[in-house]
Image (cartoon, rainbow, N blue to C red; front, side):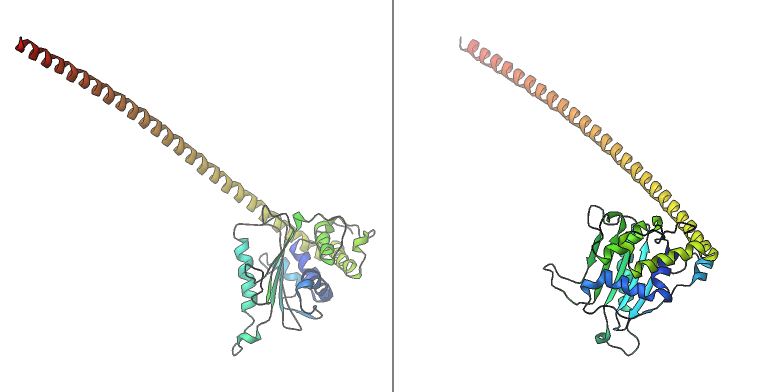
Length: 301
């Protein structure tokens, strides 16, 4: 290839899985990720928002996810998300709900609803502290019993994927998205030696070798770089604000501790003064009693 092409850049990603000429790749991908959870494998799909090169050149806010419906009525959403943010999980849940909810048209009842599957490939870790790179969320109770087998949400965290040997088609795709930018089209490794993965590589080559496609790729990459810079700056500002708030809270705690120590010292001094006063009064009372007794003795003499 003339230029290295990253398959995670959204225009490339959508060309890979969301273009009409690559519909077989979309079928292959869906069966690789969802195969174990599908009652029947995907054999035919209709891409509901097919890739259009012009939209990426003219509209920086173009829709970059892939939506499809198979011949059994099941719906699919696939999205690549290179940056994570605080509201990403609610967004993921909302878009799955939207995918499921928008099946019904006027006059249709709930019995016509079909499963909906949302697949998110994540460039940054989202579930911090969880070592697994795949996460499958289904409608189940605390004992694992399925409420309704109507799809779910699938998260694939690329940063956590580190398999050297490819054992499944799911791993093949994840390794491709993670390492595809550095593959040599003329010397592909063994795990890329399938018809589908060579076709995926041809899509990367098209972006590399065709000037207009490469311009599209460069424009999207530049836009995403800007977004990453903005997000890093925002995170930095948010962290600085958190640090400042933590410093102010620590300062308040220190002042409060100092005040409490001062109060405790004052109370201790007050208690000491009261104790001395009580001791003085006791001595005076004892002295007065001695004087009284002395006076009585003298009176008896």
